[in-house]
Length: 255
Image 1 (cartoon, helix red, strand yellow):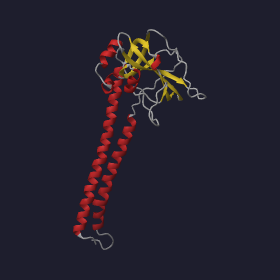
Image 2: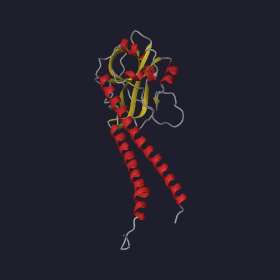
Image 3: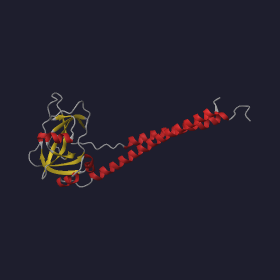
Image 4: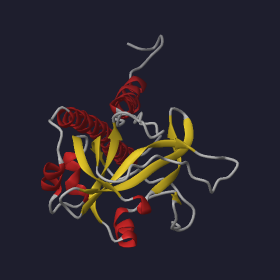
């Protein structure tokens, strides 16, 4: 038979450990619910911005004046109608990009805005690559002179995993805006434009909607709350109910 003092010490050790574990799992469940609420708010904010009137050159420059990449996020997903001239010598084809389940290039080209020296990076669309000659880039129709484009403001193109350091050239895995600005000498704005409208230049522009996966957070929250509930039940059974059952006499001799 266990000594009373040792039994009491073990009881309190198990109790404290159980309370800590229950508190941690319940907190993780609440954190996942908070993440889901944040994403729902972000989704609502994106919907509100996309419904706002399109920004022109002056409106875009005013919105991002003095902003860095994080500050410019406040205007992501807004529609724009911009005028300017392409800067084809600074074009980039981002490799290993998918659209409609096919792998190819995202064609990215700077647009110098009319009436300003500021330049915005435009994700013009997707083009297939030549798998026979991987150094060949597609011929994309690029008008000379003034152009007018429609699009939606977005973060810079997403970064993909790459081995080693980025190599300069027209075909790249990723773009780093500050590095590209230094390389080209262009005064780049801290965001990009996903071009929309008719694709008469041979590019696809079926941009996927931004993913806001709320169900995943709800699933994780359910798992954490279920684990917290299981810990409560196990504690009650092994620390409260089972010891009491053992102390109650059973059988024909019980009175």
